[in-house]
Length: 530
Image (cartoon, rainbow, N blue to C red; front, side, top):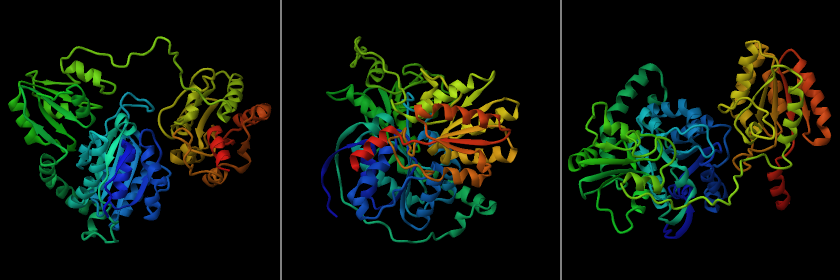
């Protein structure tokens, strides 16, 4: 179908539209900034509805990866979306998907967050792709995002491998005009020719691993010949620019770049092009957003020449995002601060919304916790994590999704009393249920607060998998029904909440308190819709 249009899109949206136009049958995801808009765009797309593309949110990234793998198994094209720490959750399925391979095209979209705008770390997902021996794509523009995911599906089916597509916050959340192309129909159901590779018994896995290693050279050749990688000869100062780093490079040369440039947006690293650049240049600056993934491979353990410049040698900062300014400095140009902060701008640290039910939970919890000498509150990932900041300062830990319950359990196992966990409804179903089961099986003396605002609030109000089911889930796991208590977090109920907290803290076993009130933001939106 002819579809030549120009549309202003976020990078996330360009990927989503490219996937729809590629014959996508399903997107599987758990919301996480900066990847959320990919799935939301597909959910709101009239064309996706017309094509009946599956686009419901998943309980977590692992279930998303496995469901997409199932869709690929029957020959359909599937997209998995997550933020970088979500790939940690999906890692078992992702790495083993390289061993099974794909049937229908399978693309794993991971949005990294250099500078940790809304994340716990700065990990670079390209290492996962290298670890799993899968191809990696990294777009340098919104147009390339749209074009690249179409090529990623094709490459996945050509090599029968999942493809990792990596972008960073600035690419995900910046806009540009995108030229669309023809729309492809979805694949028909077709099953893999070699069914044995999908059964990872050791005898099959050993054979499959050898096959996976054998196609690495063809994958390198494909990267060297890729339209997304380009070598342009110039002077003796070379630059390797990866993904959005190429964008920043060209911003610093509005009248044309005279340097020798190797643009890398498809991996494995095209070694032939890298070797040519190293032979042609006296020094090489490597621009990549995230960790020194390419720099470490190019530099090698024995490189003592000082020829390679980048994050490891100090020309670029070791942490944080690439910016046009720090790239400009690394190129040897005078520093220019393009966006100096105004002296009149007052810092606004993040805070829980006025009227948020989490506020009433922390007000009550703080007062009760003060009645004990060693009370500790283990919290989790969600907007309620802001309870660590003033004025509440109510929580003592936040590590990863689902860690609150298991950390509280471990502390209680070691003798801490009271040991309290605070977790959100969406985080609980994402990865808190198994921790609660461990606590029940060990008869751990912990109090779990599942602060239920009936949505996945931190990422914009997506559906929560546990809505209207939390009591049943907790009882099914084994929590005594009389110790599953539901309260309404409002100032007028403060004394009732404090009384229930004291009772359940004193109970010698696992108890669950569910403060339930709809997120103030989704409530406002829902009222407008009604």
